[in-house]
Image (tube, rainbow, N blue to C red):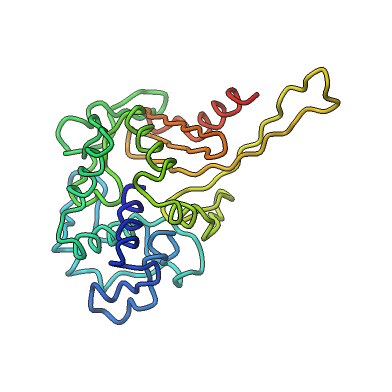
Length: 277
C-alpha cells in the first residue's frame, strides 16, 4: 500500500498516469503493453518474483542483476488477462518512482512515516529482527528463515506496530495522503483473485463483511449489516499483518503477529462482527 500511495501522488502531480507504458522507463519495446495500472493490480503477467532472486539471506539479486536479467524473464500470462500476485511488479514500480523523482523508495516512505508520526515503522535491515519471527512446523515453534530485504522495499519488508498502521489507515480514510478521487479509483475492483474469490483494486485488497445484528423488540427480523472494506495483508517468514479500513463505519482494524500460521484476515473479520453485532 505504501508504494500505491506514492504512485497515486505522482499521478496527482501529473508526473505519470495509470496508462503509462513501462517501456517509457526501460527503453524496451517488448514492455509497451504493460502499464502502471497492470503493475498496481497484479495483472501484468509477471511472475511472483524474479527467477534469479532468492528469498533467503543467501540472495545476491540486486539492482544490477535486475537490469542484466530483466529482458530474459518469462511471463506467466498476457497483461490484463488474470490476477497473479507479483512482488516483481511492485519492485518495478519502486524503480519507476526512483527514476521519476531521483529519490530512493526508502526515503519516500520514511518521509511518509515521519509526516504521520509513525515513529515505530522502519525498514527491516536484516540485523537481528528476524530472531523475533517464528514459524510453527511439526508443532514446534522455531525461528523463521532469514529474509533478504535489501532490494524488496517497494514490495514490503517493513517493521511496524498496530498503532502506526492505524495512523496510516486513518490518513488514508481522511484523504491526508491520497486524494478522495484516487482513493475511490484505487479501491475499485480491477481484477478478481480467482484462487480466493476476492477482488483487488490498485494496491488495495477489497472485501465485504456481513453481520447478522440482534433484533430489537420492535423488529420482526434481525438486520443484516453489509459493509465493504479495503486494505491489505502482509506475510514474511515468521510474521503476518493485516490492515482493513471500513469507510462506512469509519473503522480501522490493524493486526500484527510474529507468526505466519495465524490468519490475521479472519481475526479481523471476527473483530468487525463483534463490534457490530
